[in-house]
Length: 339
Image (tube, rainbow, N blue to C red; front, side, top):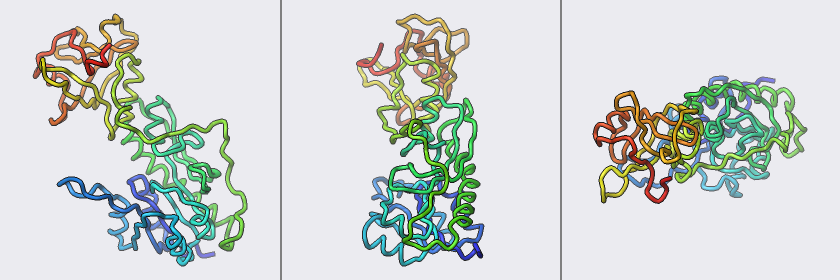
């Protein structure tokens, strides 16, 4: 078998897919088509949102299509006409139904940013950080119509740093996933060989354990609001887990009679097991360190290091304290949510 002649359809939209797609291209497989999500309408002067897979494919002169519905009958027929061996799906944004998966000889594989069956869904990297996990990884599955539920073909594991944001971890996992993706393709090539399209695929890989399944739903802006009654560690996980989007936030009523200012919290240092009273939770604490923004929380304090007031540039927390002459006892959070 000459693997260079194998034909692979690539499906992806976001940045997580690009390293694996580039590795597949560099390995010499034939790439008859790259499918990506349609560009959304432009809503601001900043132009269209980033489209990493589209940009990558265009830079290499690869054919690109963006069907509104990957499961439309005409699209499924188009996929079948390509006579491909495999489709590789990553960070795409649509679920493929059985008819679409059956258009290639070996079906489809999907690279997912978690140790499946943990964190099935749209935000696996973020949910792992939010949960305070110490380890995660990248998993490649043989696709089935069930979301992220197919048998596991390859896995790579990695620790999560105590200072790592979701954005940093996701970028790292996209690189770690390259080896897993290539391993899965090699496995299918070896085991399925000249398997005929339309014939039932034999079972490959390991079945996911149902008792270990957990969900990773898409993040919402409401989840990013800081609850100062939570522990210092939980608040730290929230701050890191909500970056780069939607970013953890609180409010500060810096001018009497004016609406509270929304503060995006970019970096904190958790200090649990610090003595605070109930009325100090959510408040600026006294400190021996000049201009230190230490806020009381459920089990101690959180030192805010970097923040960004709405409409302004990101700054050191000390700069914010000096600019508003904040004193110990100043309370953070919307008035109706304050402790």
